[in-house]
Image 1 (tube, rainbow, N blue to C red):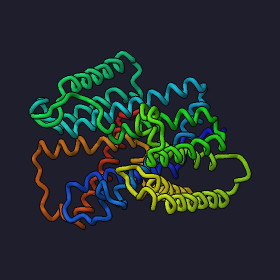
Image 2 (image 1 turned 90 degrees about the horizontal axis):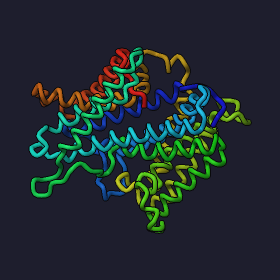
Image 3 (image 1 turned 135 degrees about the horizontal axis):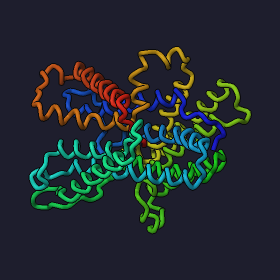
Image 4 (image 1 turned 90 degrees about the vertical axis):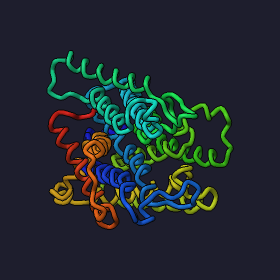
Length: 395
């Protein structure tokens, strides 16, 4: 890994914060009417991409950007490779568990389970916080163990009572498509272990990125041996892990102590990478099409190019901009990312229980879009407020 000891880069926090706010925003578009088509997901079988189809892969790429920084910081504190792998496994497992509970909520049969979908989400998210809060300032570890035990009991109880599907075709708690957090967890798990194994060697990381890009193409060409499909789809599909490894490669090159010493030189390398990714998109789209639903290679390349371009721009912003009060919502979302992601589940449940009915004019674009933007910012600010009150998820 790079020999640098910075725990964070302001540009990464801002880019992650912007992406998280955008994720909350597009996830709220379901509540609006007359939303411009270019903002929405395209149909599963369509050859194309909307704004909503860019957010998730951007977050995976940014996850990769953060990995070398996070691992370097832990190494500087004395963690050996074995401890780093343990950390990656625990964190990946936590994200997978969260993803499973949230995605099962989508298919909940409320009458058979005995609780509403909103209550399922609230209890799940509350359990996540109880289990994975870092409890800063709480020195009595007995209380920490108690809170975490309560969270585990809540999740086990929810899994036990869960019933999904229709009354005619009911099933118990099970994996579906892993959920957004689960997909991130699997990709993070693979990308993190590879990052540790390569020890910051650019050639090794590039080979890993290229391998997963190739796996993505072989997967869509139906040329992978069947035994490969015993692995989880986010890994064997290639595309999602390649997005993470693209971020790892970018940050490793950016932090390297070679000939790239000037910001202008690093910026030129980043733009060269954007150009190469666009070329990959141009070559692969006619073969497999452009589809988020199918995670095609062209989707991998163009979304990587867009996120890399965003990083290249953000890294050039002067400190007066990155530290300005106008960037506070981005900094809040970037520093409390997972908590910000969970906030809408509480907000929607609160609206449902209070039976608030928004005026029609607030739900129609373009004013409705302003409502969703404000909603995303409020989620980030509430998450930041909770963080100041010692609720800080340690993932």
